[in-house]
Image (cartoon, rainbow, N blue to C red):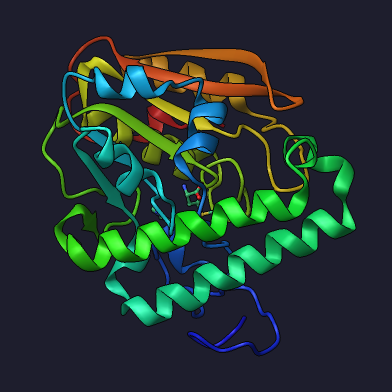
Length: 266
Ligand SMILES: C[S@@+](CC[C@H](N)C(=O)[O-])C[C@H]1O[C@@H](n2cnc3c(N)ncnc32)[C@H](O)[C@@H]1O
């Protein structure tokens, strides 16, 4: 990883050794800090600018990483909050991690270009420039409006029940199965549903890991969500040369308490 603002060799972000009972972000696998722009969120989640403008309430982006979504959707008139544990870090540290995330993506696209057809149609350098722009928008917006960027870590978020009209979660829960096993995924998804208005929706993408392997226990996870009063659906939509699979969740009745052993999805 480059030092903040520096150009040293890349090393992935790795949290310190896990403590017993530690939350997912304290476990040893590397999670990239990425900076996707609004357009890429729209492509991944099947959203439009008009749809975002028309949201009846605020939008949550969790994890927000160094994405441009909050800044760009705000410019459309949306109320947006981004949540990520790294917002507790100084801006220069996060800037360094985001630059490393961009470089890691560039290296992956060079080594396995067949896995990035959506980037191919834009050309890889143009795609990466879209991340650079999003990263700059993120840094400027976070500096100007730090209250929009909340340091928080799934599976516990510091928001009241039903706060958000739409909650988006990209490139975390299924992308890093070594950090989020089935029970951690269930707890995190239930928390995302808790903070979302029952009339609203949670959308999660992708449903595969960094090597393109689909989550093998998705059916069990959806059954467990159902036992917690959460309706789920998977939508598949071709976009950018890929079939985009999105998990969509809605509360169908008020949940009581936190998930117990009967809710385990394994
Ligand atoms: C690959 S980035 C995704 C960022 C953004 N959604 C995007 O698509 O560009 C993953 C982010 O998840 C954050 N993260 C790691 N563990 C987390 C947790 N337990 N709860 C919330 N965010 C977490 C990391 O700090 C990192 O910024």
